[in-house]
Image (cartoon, rainbow, N blue to C red; front, side):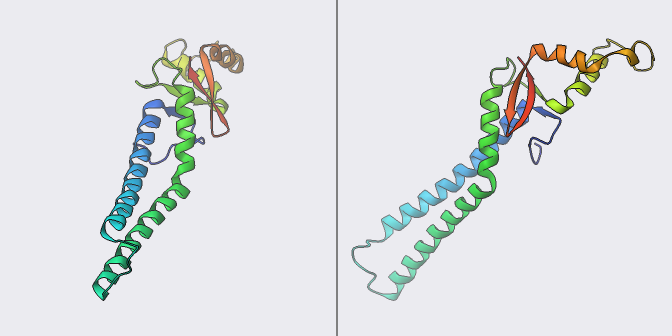
Amino acid sequence: MQSTIDNTQDVLDSREIIGRIEEREAERKALVEEVEAAKAAFGEDFDLICPPTNTAEQLALDAAMQAQAIAEAALANWDEDHLAELDALKSLAEQGSCSPDWQYGETLVRDSYFTTYAEELAEDCCMLDRELTWPYTCIDWDRAASDLKMDYHCVDFDGIDYWIRA
């Protein structure tokens, strides 16, 4: 799995996006469960109506309160560092899921890279040979890319347009 998936990349793979979403959701779920467990332990172990009657009870109460505070801080820190990424990826996945092979691996191409992508696609499909000067050097790749976009759907990834096969 890539360490990051962001809108500066020229080409993205839907499987990596799906995997990153699952990874981030699992991280957050674990932190939420830690907070819930700390709250449950705090609530079950201490009757807050009656204050602690001895030092041991007070130490246990302090430890439970500290555990809850640590768990809540960890969740808040995670949200601050990663929630925007998760939201952007989920939005992208929702838009991209209209593509027929989203779950199995679909390529997303950054708009600014699409002309280069079209050129590479034509070469990969053996439609032309780069070693030939003509007609390769005479092709209007911007127009070819524009025509290719008819088979693609535009999705927004955090303010940047990407093209995915429709």
